[in-house]
Length: 279
Ligand SMILES: [Cu+2]
Image 1: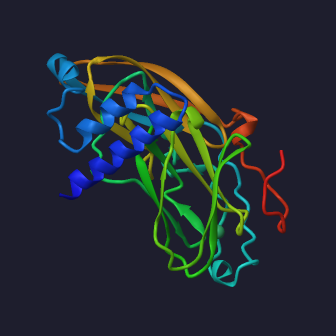
Image 2: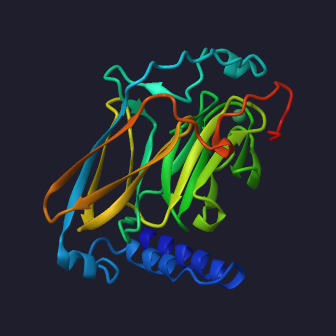
């Protein structure tokens, strides 16, 4: 029942975008429909006949880990209770990087539709800091803190939406469109240190590295793809990967710390009383 309802909502969302938006996007509609029915779907059928494999990878860091500054969280008494450092580059003990989003470019499918992505505002940080969503899928933005947050999302310097979320507010539901930008930055207008990222892809094949620096992408239709990594401070990298039936393709990304992310998504350190970024 819940799935059916979700599906209906998803279809409504897709339909309304088609009507009001910049046209086309047949792909989005195709992907939304099978989502609620699980694996046996029309969209997945052609790929399934050729089989699937998986991708396992790691994101290594070969340079000197940067020293992360202490965040000044004094402006809010609740946030000030917890000391935290900046998190724009998290180098793990095994010389890998956490919070790197990895996504397949050019595949289709891989959308389960079952678990909605959630961005929590917890301890005055975005948690998780980096996620990958699918074009047209709804996500939930939650405020777990006993304080006011203001979710302000950007594609480059363009605001996508800007919405206050006082403590105890219900989840904010949002849908990102790839046409609006594949790299969406979350900022809080109340707490300028708060930064999060949502990558918007046209398929559900993705992963985000954690404390081991590893990621795994399962059930990928066989084929050769571009795999793209995103690290907020060092930018994107691309590698080619070929997925063979019932095999595991092993890949490795490496950053050495000399990379420079495109300016549009670099961390911007702004004055304490400013609510907005000025580029
Ligand atoms: Cu905030």
